[in-house]
Length: 275
Image: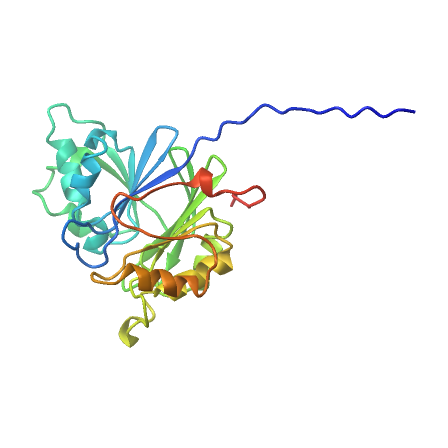
């Protein structure tokens, strides 16, 4: 009997990438020509802004109109992560043709201060506030979202976004915690706070992380790519990358304004990209 091999050609499946663009990533205050934490995440035409720290709005508006932002997620209420929500809402509310209210997701009370910057009612029609309890799941546009409370001086929500078979995890600001590895398990990209390249000062050890700790978390999670963010102004990028590489042998980026990463390019076959 003769066996005849049949080659089956499967049609190519087009993957719509999840794209992360860094608008700013400085910790505490923006260095010259830089900005604090702000990340534009795009998938299938939907634009989600994660954090809105000092000076990110001019960089955002260089890419998209204020009306083209579809939702905002704020990790916590420190101003280097949320202060520029105010000018973003002003740009929408005071335009000639105001867009519909912008969905804004945040922990309870996290945005009370920034939303009170203008006179009462001035921005009321510009946003729809969705306060959530960390530890649950949300649907934001095309993204399935899992949140987790991570340690910081104020309540801070780490986030795991999944869409199109791709996963992005972001810690916000967080001290070392086993919850980070769980949140980032099998993620294509872990965007991890790494305020310090070297040792974390004693008074901050429970609330902030170092580059080596971020590397350790990425390794434990099996993340495909590590991006270090929230570096203290003046921190050398080479030192931070070297410290992280001592714990993690995958690709390492330093989040700086203008950096873009397509998660589809970070996803080798076999990685688990689900919740």
